[in-house]
Image 1: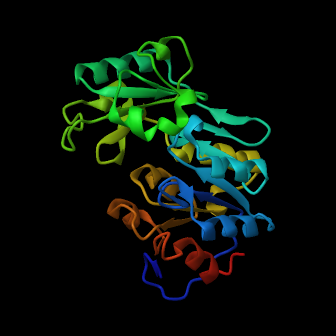
Image 2: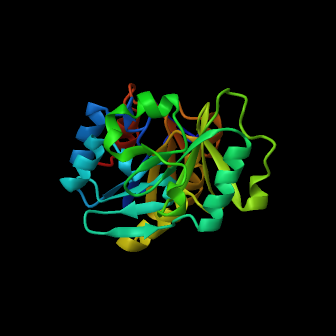
Image 3: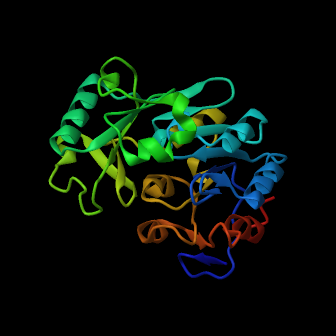
Length: 273
C-alpha cells in the first residue's frame, strides 16, 4: 500500500542520502522494533544511505534495541527529545538545553494548572510528583527515573512533558507563544513543552551538516504531530498508515502501518535497498 499526495501512480525519486525514522508506531510497536524493520535497517546499513533515528523520546528512555543498532553501526545517529539533542557513536552532534528562565516559566505554568510534569536530561527523567506513568510505564527504567521537583534548577534539561488527568484538560487557556514556548501532544493525555523554535527539523539540519548532505536529498518516516516540521523540511516525507490525519496531509506519500510492512512498501516501490 502506497499512495502519493499528488495522485501520481508512478513516481521515481533519487535514492535518499539519509533516511530519518521516528521510533514509536513507525519502526516500533509497544516499545519493540518490528522484526521486518530491524531486518530492513540492517540491509540498508550495507548501502551508502545514512540511517538516523528522529524521535521525541528522551535519551534515557531510548529503547535498548534501538541503541544496540547504533552501537553496531547499523544506525549512524540519533535525534531525540524532539530535536533538542542529537548524537552518534562518538560525540554529541548538537544540543539545545532549556534556559533557567524557560525551566522556571514551564514549572510555573504546570504548577498553576496543578499538573504533574517531568523534565528530561541526557541521563534522567525527573518527575515533579508521583503519577501513574511514573509508577507503571517507567518501571523498566527505575535507574534513571526519580522524583525531584527542583532538579531542573540545578541540572541541564532539554524538554518537559506534562500529564493531563482528563483528555480534555490540555492547558487550552495558556498562551504559550507569549512565553516563546509551545505544547506538542504525542498522546491524548500527554504533551511536551518546548521552546517555540524547537523541532526535529532543527536537529535534522545539524545532522545533515554533520554528514554534508542537503535536507532535500533526505527521506523521513513518521506518524505523529511532532513530525510535522520534519516533513516540511526533507525532500520525501512518508506518513505511516495510522499516522495523524494532519501529518498525512503534509506527507508526500502515505504508506501502510507497521503490520502492513509500510516501510518496506515504500523502499521496494522506489527500489531503495
